[in-house]
Amino acid sequence: MKILFATSEALPLIKTGGLADVSGSLPPALQQHGHDVRLVLPAYRAALAACTDLQAVASLELTGSTAPVRVLEGRLPGTQVGLYLIDSPRHFDRPGGPYSSTDGRDWPDNPERFALFARAVCALALDQANTAWRPDLVHCNDWQSGLVPALLSLQPQRPATVFTIHNLAYQGLFSWETFQRLELPYDLWSLHALEYHGQMSFIKGGLAFADRLTTVSPTYAQEICTPEFGYGLEGLLNYRAAVLTGILNGVDYSVWDPATDALIARHYSATDLAGKADNKAALQRHFGLPEDRNVPLIGMVGRLVEQKGIDLVVAVLARLMRNAVQLVVLGSGQPQYEQALRGAADHYAGLGVVIGYDETAAHLIEAGADLFLMPSRFEPCGLNQLYSLRYGTLPVVRRTGGLADTVVDAGSSGRGAAQATGFVFDQASPEALHTCLRRALAHYGSADAWTRMIKRAMRQDFSWQRSAEQYLALYRDAIEQNA
Ligand code: ADP
Image (cartoon, rainbow, N blue to C red):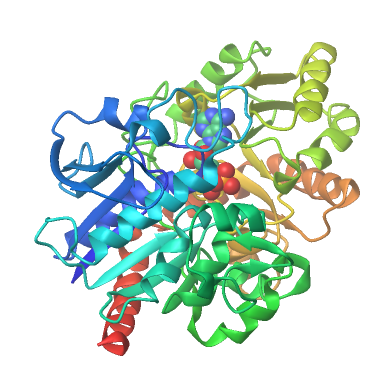
């Protein structure tokens, strides 16, 4: 199969979250099965800087750009996967992130930027870019590539389309005036297309028009069909339920494995756990905490936003820190939580906080902590709990989305105890989180059972292999049906 994978971020080019991990590792996994997979991204400044082998292969005249848009071809660094970068300097060559400036504000021209990107992807998909390559299928991801299935649906001869929801909370909502300014076909302005309560929704382009819909865990696939998680799109998602599936994200174990991880203090594995204590000491030093191998150390990495339950963590801090326990938090996000955490770190000797993005510290937390905290309100898949399992850092998670699908609670009955890999709670409340943490800390005292659970967690296999096979089966179906 020839697959064009359209995404707005991919490691190692540019990353804001889990989408970059997926885009950087699913295409190579598909390629290993013998398929011709090529990635397409905007030519952000960071992406241009990360690639050394780019060649201009086409020049496109696109609505939305007065200058010709170049298509640059190369390889995703560190892989053999083909890469196209859509080069429109006015839209993409600027400092800051893929969606926002360095001060965190969304770029005001995001609709223009991602409409242009979608038009360029369509040109590639229809072999209008002189690449002499026509994909059988285009796999789009999140709202930034949502217009692609919508625009392709207007073409008589088009490749099959798949749209993956990595997070339904981000929809790309803009005004009717913006819709007009983008010169999109008026046929797309309808409740069955891009219109959403009087606004234009980029994500609806994917949800309404793609041949197949996926999201990144089976539980999240069910949750988004309900009002609680569906943001008013649950009606459309229920209507399309027959083509909607959940496929768990995999882990790139060449990056996230304590036996080989270059960013941690000392390697260890399920058969030789000795090095984990050295990582714990290194982590305590890194965060300025008292070095103590016996005190339970809880880690947290992620966006400091309510989705991740950071407000619940802040609410239980005073109670939690009364116990003999240490907590390290790495992340950035909503200013009030950043401030609350910074303030609390001055107050509690056992609390270490780093506000910012730090890949090395994230690896050290996975390796050095005893427990990993993810009390998310919703979690499409979640990657950190999967990393935590591999690092023997037992996850404490809320039963939602991918967290529910990947962590088995130590208190479970039935398959429970014998398969437990972490601690799971139900209600998104400080009380429920606190009770669960107390339960986890009580288990920490029983050394043998704890070590058994660590080893069991480390043996879990969430590699891309199985997920890649599921995507390939889905692609085959979509292509067959589109033929
Ligand atoms: P989401 O995509 O919702 O942010 P995921 O758990 O799916 O959450 O993926 C988050 C990814 O970003 C993980 O690889 C995580 O390690 C990483 N990450 C998040 N915040 C930070 C941070 N402050 N420093 C380093 N890595 C981070």
